[in-house]
Length: 212
Image (cartoon, rainbow, N blue to C red; front, side, top):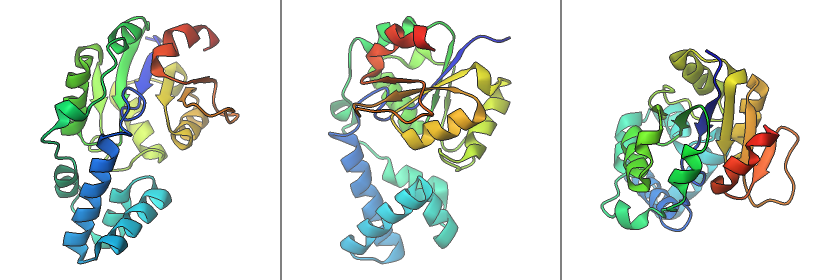
């Protein structure tokens, strides 16, 4: 079976997480570090950013340097009592995704409970064959290669079948190195060499397919 497999990042790819969701997660993570590492807010925030920049995920730094329980961290930092009001839903997303031939998988560094809730609110959850979250990658987030390889093994697919659609250039660099096609969702003026197609918005994807 050599059908095309679309791998979609979630936050800032399938929806805009910048206005409401990312600030909420950042505040929750900073509060978690304050409480569990006995830091003041400024120090906790600085450490959160440092680990995110160094490892691609704050969680990786916490596990590596503090022995943090990943499930405990993910549960407590991804609580959204008002998620329905925070998700920015684009009504045309469903139509754009349905126009793509091949199977579709969400590949996210977010926890499963959050990813599934967002997909339901976007009203596209039924269009995906799987949600491959941080738990499924054994807490090895993108851009680490291990999570990518685990996804390929789970679905018995080859990298050459896959198109990775992402807002993070760093994650696409890993995808390209493994042999995937890459689509960068960005309003940057220029794309790095490992990007096959650059689009400003995921809604443009059906029109860009011919370039892949």
